[in-house]
Amino acid sequence: MRAAAPLAVCVALAVTASAASARGETAAGPVSHAASAGARSAAKAKPCTTRSRRSRACPRAAMRLTLLPGSFATLNFGATPPPGGTVDFGPSGTSTLTLSGTLTGYTIGRVGHIDVIPIVLTGGAVRAEPAELWWDNACGGARSPTLRSSALGVVTLDPARPTTVNINANTALYTGTTSVRIRMPLERRVEGGCGLPFAPTGYADSFDTFTVRGEYGSKTRVDSPVHAVALQACLVPGDPSQPCAGATTAYGALLQVHLVLLTEFHVRAARAPRRA
Image (tube, rainbow, N blue to C red; front, side, top):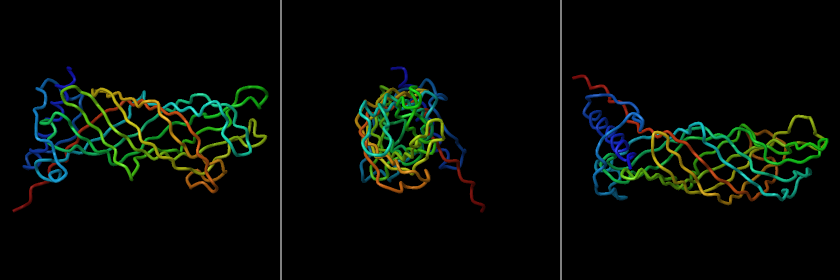
């Protein structure tokens, strides 16, 4: 595929800049796929082992994934109202949550000289724009929201589970396993609250692991399969920046993620030479 050659150039430039930086010759900045074109595909190289990953044969290069416009998640709690609480939340349909943010990590091995580029993601955050989750027709017969997500919700990597990505330099295939923590405060309509401001709740943490697959390019597009997830919800009014003040309830939902990504490989600037 044509995408393989630009990918090899991108990572080869990163390696070249890293070597020059180590010799004190140049200072290099980020190298993105869009800035590279027209080199041979990566040659086969001995993969890094657990023992050799910290050696010079297996250098690390910092990288960053930026979520671009067009990134979103779809969430469906099904047609059954959630149990508990004092409000009949009514049936739920499919909610679309617009996503933005960045994730950071590093590559392992001599990027530009290996067929499969392993990436470990270590940090960053993704936020979702507020979205309505449940509705009913209790307010004058019109369909109106009863529960919605908060702008203070955030998705981060699960610190207890690794998140890894592989980019095939020859086929441009992008595959990964993503483990996340979903911190989700809510906003709910109170009893008799038609036309009144929603009441915020504290947050509850949920955890999810899913796979993604797509094609690497100037805009990498990846999708997860539709999969079941148990989301913890706090229905107790409270400070959305604080944990739930009461018990949380797990609601089953179907989740799918579509991401449009800018992938950048970064090389640290060279240190100034020491004075004699």
